[in-house]
Length: 320
Image (spheres, rainbow, N blue to C red):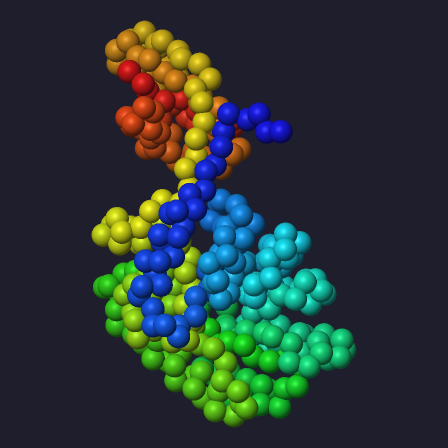
């Protein structure tokens, strides 16, 4: 039994609202992948994944193999793309029926060799195209050689070609984003023409879904928008916040004018002040950057600014 006063609430109605909002922007045949990496953006990826499975989402995406393994152990059957699989995890990727992103000739050749030794035919993989994000992926100079490798491949089956838009939320970068979309389509068409099947294509993230319907292709990847943030204030207003972090006040302190709070005395009371002590801190993921009135909490529907430096397991707010 958890007796902690602190609870992270996940609002399932908000999740369904946000899903419906983004689905309304898609053509009926466009598939939806939801990104649940990093504990589903700091929430509970197993609980969220179970709800997504109930909602008949097409795909999940995680950053690392361990996340996918945890989902499988929890009974999640949806296809899972591992965005950064790493060679040391190939055994577990296959054991738990996860689908790796192969983003370089090195990773591709290593996985081909691994799958071939296991005797696999058509093991599902995804190929990352670097259209301008410049993190992972094959570039234009690689396309011809990549096509030659994929053409006669028996051990693997390319489920999708995908890329990532670098600035889809920034309309001042529209020309660059349209260029990304154009070369992604061009290169994947080139890669697909010698295959006996047509892999899915996806490059649109949350802002890509909103701002670039021409980039929806066969599937889209919904990330931060699913959790209630639309990368634009107007879009965010149409979404609902999925997570609420709630706790209880530990103590109320009364400060006289001139008294200070917390490390390095960053907050000095300018008048008689009431301070509430909250049992959370940076060890719980509360950024110290929110110290000294940069962050607020809500108490009885009123905003109370954080005062002083956030401590490891405690912070203070002004409730005067």
